[in-house]
Image (cartoon, rainbow, N blue to C red; front, side):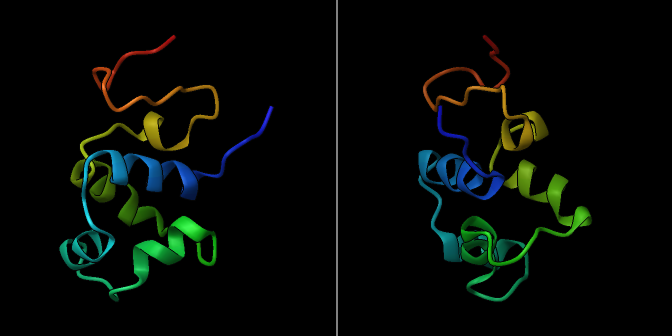
Length: 81
């Protein structure tokens, strides 16, 4: 079983919502490459940015961070298995 990083999960969620990386960075008032650095694991997300990013991506914190949570863009966001 391959584990995926939280950055990879964030990228998967963002892409499933069809939100461009530059739009996320702009909405968060960050450097244009901020979200790409988070997604690649080059930098860690700051704690205060987590709930704001979750709201922007229309997902829960569990969607972003829990390893046992299965995220599928076509399912309601609070569905668990």
